Length: 401
Image 1: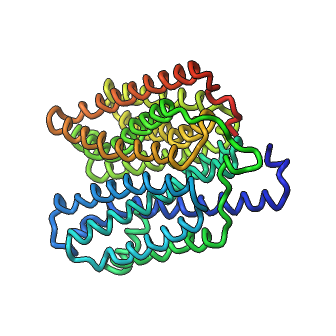
Image 2: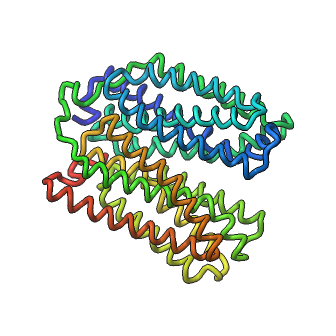
């Protein structure tokens, strides 16, 4: 069934549901990117060193991991929107308490809860959007992740503006808490979508956990590579002498800006290209720009070109993996949870490995590690296509958009 076949009332409900996911992903991007710029202020509040305060990244990641497992189980059994409204309300309360905490242990606990509730929004948006649009999810999935990127892109600007206006980080978190309540209200007023298995045209395809595992491995490699590049390009540029401390900051913004722009451009592309084709193009681009860094990093402008190109190539990978999964598997809460667990583990592991290799072997070693991870992703993608064919699952035979 195409959107033109859907009765107008049902189409309006679809738009309301999709808009609630888009709005919550803007908030998710805002809150996810706010930790980095507020680290010095939080260290001052708790009397901690920057090294000690970095534990917040770890506790938030563990909360996200646990929340991914729990929320997926819930979405398969109960209406999703009341749960998401409650999760966002509690998340707003936790965020409001952050600037009031003067103990590092208490602050770490609060960030664990932020990760726990954030993962519910992430799993929910990715799962429920597929339930709402089914075969036509392609462009909407790219739009969903564009809105996350938009929130992450403007978050440092919001933090800088609030600190400049108030002289402290407190109002940053109180503003984020107030904004987080907006999608909570929207979810409370919007009916939950029906799971595909319970709809008038149920999705009765069996779940192949081999294919789920392979896609989770792709999330592990791609998300770890994305965050690793974004987290280390600043230090790489400074240590190689290709940028100053100031221009390296602009280079990091260029990467995230290109990634956000790429997601916007990918919205119409997802309606025309199969996910397998898009993912192949992404892999070619990622490998090309990493080879560019390995061989010609000292050429003026090359690192800037590589940062922009890598961001554009990585832009639609996450939503494309979700589209690929929906074309070959029934998307349930448990399935999406497995993907988010892979994503979370990758975000913890690959950037950490990059830091270890950087310290032992110098800046070019992290580019080599990124290349190895990208080539491993290409191999896993090939294994996924072969496994799908052997199980007689048509890879991306559904419409991309």
